[in-house]
Image 1 (cartoon, each protein chain N blue to C red):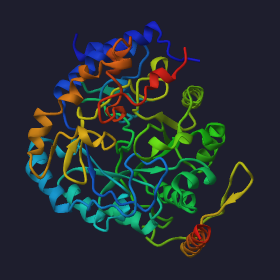
Image 2: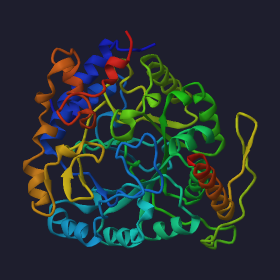
Image 3: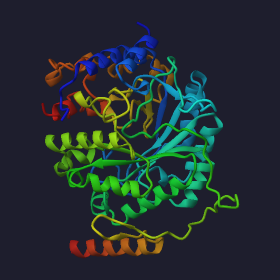
Image 4: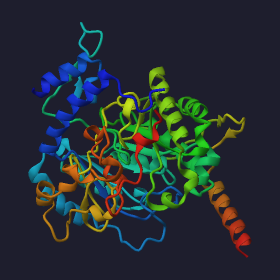
Amino acid sequence: MKGRHISLRKRIGLKLFKGMYDGVVERHRLRTLFWECTLRCNLRCRHCGSDCRTDVTESDMPLADFLHVLDTEVTPNVDPHEVLIIFSGGEVLVRKDLEEAGREVTRRGYMWSMVTNGLSLTRERLHSLVDAGLRSVSVSFDGFAEVHNDIRQNAESFERARRAIGYIREVEGLTYDVITCVTPAMIERLEEWKEFLISEGIRNWRIFSIFPAGRAKVNDSLHLTAEQFQRLMEFIRKTRKEGRIELNYACEGFLGGYETEVRDHFYMCNAGVTVASIRVNGDISGCTSVRGNYAQGNIYRDSFWDVWQNRFTPFRQREWTKTDECKDCKVWEFCRGGGMHLRDDEGKLMYCHYNMLKE
Amino acid sequence: MNIRWKVALLTLLGFSASACCGTKKAAKGEDKKEADIIINENEDPRIQLMYGVPFPDGSVVRPVDENGNVVPATPAAEGEGVRQPDGRIAVPLTDEEATKLVEQVKAEEAAKAQ
């Protein structure tokens, strides 16, 4: 068991990487832009961090508003070929103009991609999106039918997601992965789940665990215990060594001795560093999972590029996170207070992955 | 210490170059058995964001059949279901079946609520 112990070799690696990450922050080149194009969703998942629902009061952002920001603020300042635009929600497929949006951003030289629950993805719709320039897609797939359908609160969501992944796999060159949010109900069945995914021909798999935001905040049954979390890390490490399926733990938090062993890269939070988002209400932020009150501006009153260049201080200078349990933490220099999405409205850390790992 | 040195040291320590900087695989040459990793020190690393997607690689091609025709964008017949670990066969529902199922679930929920 690796736990929290960091070997000397890894500590040197982390120190070297730390200096490189400082450069990334200083340059803060925009590489990924989320467009939260809707908060509408055709599911009502128990673990939703966005608290999306079918009857949202927030309207979708008009495509023209997003394109206006691209044309006047983003494109003049970046090489579009180096920026990946991710359509996110809500459930993006509820938007009828997704193809038009795709065509428009492709025409401007950007790559675009989307995250979906797969419920309403038909082969026909997928091909239509591919024709509109879709380059990468991620599908949520949280476990066997009883677990997935229970979390998604929809009896057909498992089969629909499975079918959607099958359609995606048919398209040569379309990059994809499946995302599993591991809950206590799946911990005992991870091996079986892995074999199932492999038998389905899936090659790319990403795992994350619940963090207490949105509806997940009040669903204690979805949270892993420290022991379960450690078992999850061991499972990922072992699976990666096997090499039968590409598996990564998401960019959630610093993982001590597991760094570089459960994901391809050292831990870093790129929210507000290389990643920006335009929220459905026009707010400009880091990743869409970051709490709403960390918005740095709004496209309807601020210049996006000015905000990107000159604000985002809480994202790029993390000294303010050195409070409470982070104050005297020995690994703060590598972790910098964890992911921005793990900070609550008052800036307090809601969940520490490092502390979840036993000695 | 510049980035190149740091990357070199990290590589010597056994860490993959992709763990710390932008990298790309060189095209396989005829005389090369394995693709080389080219380190691009001007590129910042791309990471797997929690709610993000994997970075696209390759160009997208629509599926073609054995005659080279693009597969029609109409639902094809589903193959056999996959056996799940509990022994059940998972067979995809048709749209009609799914609609019926949803209606049935809704009716059950409504009955419970009463």
